[in-house]
Length: 233
Image (cartoon, rainbow, N blue to C red; front, top):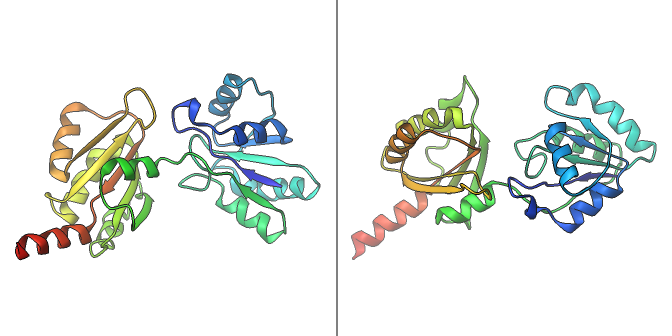
């Protein structure tokens, strides 16, 4: 069996008892960043073999891992933080396991976009998760494809590209479109900053950016509804 195991996005206390038990019981662990996973295991006094599995070697190692699972081994898959397969390696392995009738079990647990969405105060009944924008080419094309999207939109972004992302979003969605930038979620310096795209760009240009980033863009539908309410009043 393959276990997909979410790990804390910052605060070690967020790991579940079930996740700890699973990590103790599997034959070995596939980790996106072995150093980070080893630190987590040491914190909880778990001794287990950890093997590197990331976007640069997942194609090459895929069949070998499937063969090991087929032979009867039980393996856990973890990412740097949060739930594997959500903007992290894992999708290829899960798909190949299912194709080979290998049981896959995904444990519930931490993922960064859920607390970011809730903390934003924007509508959470309908939303779309876009993950990371392309690092270089295709960023504007992705954003332009979302111009008519009415639901709340969620993005992941690197701190090194946050200012660029906010500028591009302001050009596509308008400078006055509201958004929330969440960073360092679950950590000591967690911050959820709400403002217009222009205000957020200016704020982080002056302050600087650290930590992993989630951008939540206010839904177009809510803006339209609010405008209609104001007109009716």
